[in-house]
Length: 322
Ligand code: ADP
Image (cartoon, rainbow, N blue to C red; front, side, top):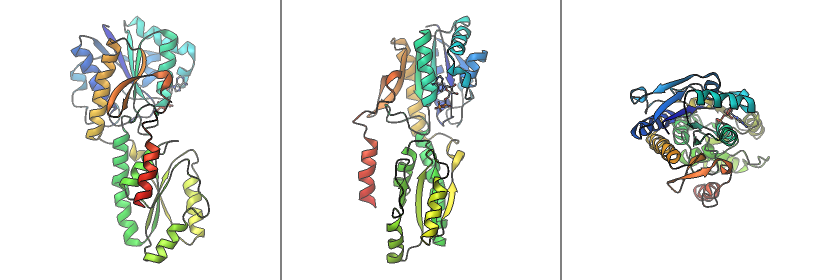
């Protein structure tokens, strides 16, 4: 290759900048010119593509968000628009693409690679860690730590006032942030998207309260699809005589400086993306499994690896700690 491009798409995640930096610097080290596409697939469609140098990615490894900007581009779901994007790239002499984004962005990358034949490598960039084929995604560790910071503060006030706090964390349909935050934050309960909440779910909470005269409790709720869920749980708890307080952490979890872990992960994935292109991969995602990077076909990113079994280990750890 003599020219490649990189873009960030969908929900932003801390560490995306570190990944962009690694793609650009590895490309340069390999004698390849690298271009930055601004605003995700929107920039691909309207040609918002600029040359990048080692200097243009200087001093960004520690910054949250994405210097390339991100966007949701609904028209990219149309085949004709994807061909338009392909033409924009080929007119500029760009021969391959690196896409950093979540589930949706990787679905777009897969279609684009298959239809046009242009080599594309995807990097899992999402705070939700909801790409089953990869044990980890860029931004997840930072989001867990950001949520934990807030939860530690909430615990202080919950303890002092003897209150029950319901804290909603992000993760879309995945409960990964909630389960890690639940363990690391020492929560009393974790409500995952798949948890069935019944009238007696928090029974234990009431008996413990009487037994230990302990009034404060921390319940982590994964956002899931039902926005009203946390309010419904609060309603149930009120009926059981508690006075729950609700705290929705929301977008504060998305931003901020990436943790060391996410910087290292993103740097590794960005460098490997270029190496994978040079090795001839062209419709793949850089995944991580048991600490090692691997090329996962974009067709298979939804297949969980049996060895990963993250949920199973959460369940057993949780039972021990309760
Ligand atoms: P994320 O990548 O964080 O999951 P989205 O689901 O919003 O975020 O997807 C980001 C962008 O990826 C969309 O705005 C669209 O441009 C593109 N995209 C998502 N799904 C598809 C799809 N099925 N086909 C083509 N492009 C898609």
